[in-house]
Length: 343
Image (cartoon, rainbow, N blue to C red; front, side, top):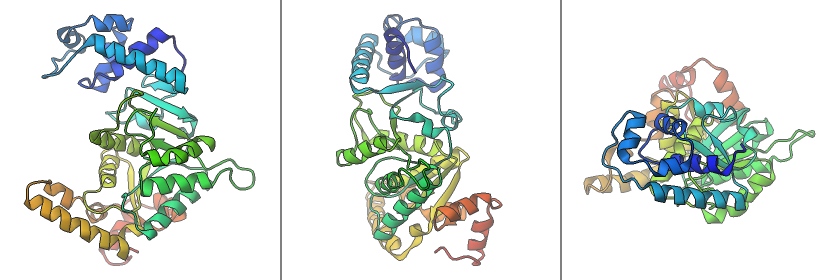
C-alpha cells in the first residue's frame, strides 16, 4: 500500500500505542489529520476521542512520533511494505478476529495469504518423528497449492518452512512452495538469527515474512505469545505436530479454538518419542508448580486435553484434507470409543 510520508508517520504512531484496542486505534486515526496533531494530545484528549479513560498508562506523544519517523526510515531502507487494517487488501481471515493487528509489516508477497492456507506449529523440542512429520506435511501442503503459515522458530516451525520451500517451483510447471513466517518482533530483525538463510529462501520462493510490530521493536517473550494468535488467525485450520504440556504451540491451539478455527493434531504428537519428551516436561513442570514458579494450567494444557474436547488426529496432508471433509467430531468420537488408535 502506498501513501505519503505524513500519512505513514501517523499510522506508525497510532500502531504503537499499546494501551488502545484495535477499534480505538481506528477511531483515533480517523480523528487526526497528522502525526503532529497526535503529538499535541494529552492522555485526557485521547480518552475523549476514544470514549474511554485508559488505566495507569504512560504517554509521550513526542517520543511516539520520534519512533514512528525512525521506523519509516528503516522501512524505506529495507523495502518493508505495510498494510493497515482498513485496507481492502488486508488478509480476510485475519480481519475476522477481534484482536487483529492495526497494521501488518511485511516483505515478500502478501498475496499468498489470500488463497488456501494452513498453520503448522509445534514444539522446539522436536523428535526425529516430529521433524519428519512437520517437513513432509508442509511439503505436501505446498505441492497441493496451500500456503504454510508458521513462526520461523526452531523445531516444528523451521521444519515446516523448510518443507514448504522444498516444494518450489512445483510439479508439472505449477508454481508452489509458498510459506509465510510471522515474527515476534520488528521485521527488520530475523528471530532466531540462525534462520536468516531460511528467511531469505522463503522470500526467494515467493513467500512472505510479516509482523505486527514496527521495525526496530525487539522480540520480547510476551510478543511470542501475541505472534501465535496471528499464526492461528491466518488459516482456517491449525495443525499441531508435537507439543508437550505447556508448549507455546498449545497456546496457538487455544487461539485457533477461540477463533472458531479447525484444530488438528498430527499422529507424531502421540508417538513413543513424543511421550518421552512430554513426561520429562511434565516432571519439570510438576516441580516448578510445587515451588510456585509455574502455573498449574501449563501442566494441564496438553494435546490430550484438546483431543478429548474434539480435536481430530491426522497422519499426513492427504488425511488432513479428508478429515476436513468429514462430519465434525467424527474422528474424536471414534478415538474415545476405541475404534481408532491415536497413531
